[in-house]
Image (tube, rainbow, N blue to C red; front, side, top):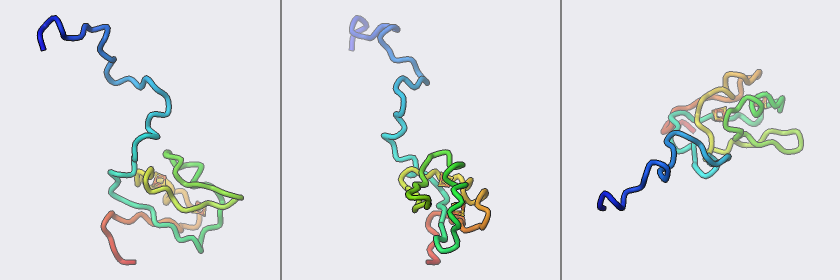
Length: 99
Ligand code: SF4
Ligand code: SF4
């Protein structure tokens, strides 16, 4: 590319800026997690605390019940396990296979 074909500074997108809202939905943020939340469904009292605290909004709810985590979006941060009042979520390291 010759000097005359290079873009001027006004044509280059500004770095580090999110120019379109909701763009993270296009990425599977769960791809790079080290830990996975394992939910013991039977012990869950469906208090809805974990979906409220989940920063990825990846714990679905339906008819007053929480459902299984969307692992494509879960980052493995462990907040859900920390806030659960009945401790029915355990963070397991990726690759653990004791089930
Ligand atoms: S580990 Fe973090 S991102 Fe994953 S479901 Fe729990 S709170 Fe949400
Ligand atoms: S915080 Fe625990 S008990 Fe409450 S909905 Fe989540 S998993 Fe169930």
